[in-house]
Every structure is written in C-alpha cells, then in structure tokens.
Length: 297
Image 1: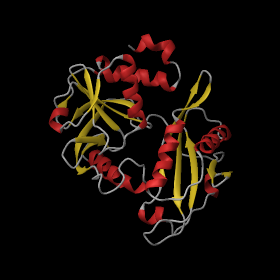
Image 2: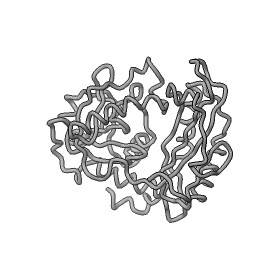
Image 3: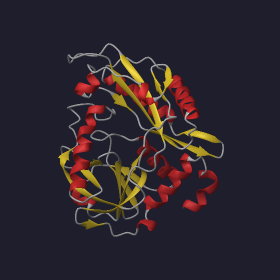
Image 4: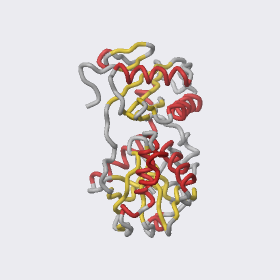
C-alpha cells in the first residue's frame, strides 16, 4: 500500500525506487531507536498542490536532530523543494509525506557522526477514519518528560504508542487515551485530544505531550472564529464528564469520539464544536476557508 513499481523516494540526494534504498545494519536508529521523523500532508487545492505547514513540520524535524545530537545539514528551503519535486515525480497532490533521518553505523551510545535522509510519500486516507471512535484508558503512561524529549518525534518513543494502541485494539477499542505521570489526560497513541464542556474547549498544555501542528492549527482557528479554548490539565474523571471530545493530528486530521471506557459522550457529534472545527480545518488545508467560512459556522 505504500509503494508500487512506479514509486519514487528521496534518499541522500537521489530520487530512486524504494527497493533500491539501502540502510546500515549497525545504525543506532535500527538498534536503539535514535532517529527522527515527521508526518506531513499535501492537498490538492484550486491553486495547485499545497504542503500544509511544511515549514513548521521541517522546523520540528530540525529540532529533533538538535536535541538528539544527530548531524543534519539540510535547510528548511531545501527540504521543501525536495518534497515538492518528490510529489511531482510520484504524480501526487493529496498525499502523506514521511521524512525520516537515520544514523550511520555506531554501536556505542554516543552521538552519531553521520546521518541519512529519506523522504517517502504515498496516498493515504485519514488514519483513524471518519467514524466516531470508541476509546479506552491505557494501562501505559505517557513518558515522563524528564526521561526524554517528549516534544520531538523520535522513532524509539513510538514504542509507547504501539503498546497503547495494541492493548486498546485487543480489548475491542479503536484507540487509547494515555495519562501523564500525574494522572492527567495527555493524548492518544498518535494524536492530541480536546474535550468540550459547556460550550468551551480544553486541551492538555505543553510539557507532557507531543504538541502537534494540527493541535496548534485548531487552537488558532478557535481564536479566529471566537471559540473559547483553554490549555489546561484535566483528569480522566473530568474527561468523563465532558459533553464531547475529539482527536487532532496530521494523519488523523480531526476525528470525533463516541465514548471513553464505559462513558458515552452525550452531545451529538454534528452539534459539537469539534464537528465545526473538523470542517473549518478541512477548509483551511484546502485554502477555502475564507470563501466557505459561513458554511462551517
């Protein structure tokens, strides 16, 4: 599903077929999870292909290399240019884009001295689909921010997400909610969470979460259209008293929740702030929000 006979990826200065790519079996990325990546989307718009918030995504990629001390010399402009060319070579407009930086050979635990850049893209629908999600509280906890850089997309960190998602799926749920070290709601396995209560939105603050770019876009949209949103800690019990809730993420976009554990959110999805923001977000990524604003609100 990720590539076919005509697919092209970028690999260290070359545009090649995925099967032609090689990697180092002594890489820290393979052995220890020391690599960084991004998830980006491009959209077909009336004015052409739009890579949504490419600069913000690539700045976060650079941030990941800095905190993990991985050498990386590409500029933001170079990365964006490469991505546009890659989309053209694959004849994609609506696509998911996955840059990843891997390390060279190093079996020690010191900083790597070299890295490789791979950028892939493929056509991919909303990661969590369009149906309302049935979620459960995970027995796994979001990593302590004093144990790693939780705001960097480091490959090894996502073991935590895999464990939480697998546990949820095995028990008949679509997704998992992870709590932080203080038992506050943090996020799901691969997206941020918002809850709605009495006409106001709440989302966990930065510190114990991956501060998603879609999350920040939703907060910006709320402020622009007059929806009250507050970044604050809230407990699982508070979430189970909310009127509704939704997830946000580049791969998932905006998706509503049906329930958490044995609590069903009482407000119909079509009448929630999340539903309005789902449509506003889609208009934003397609550069159509100004002309179609009234339809969403």
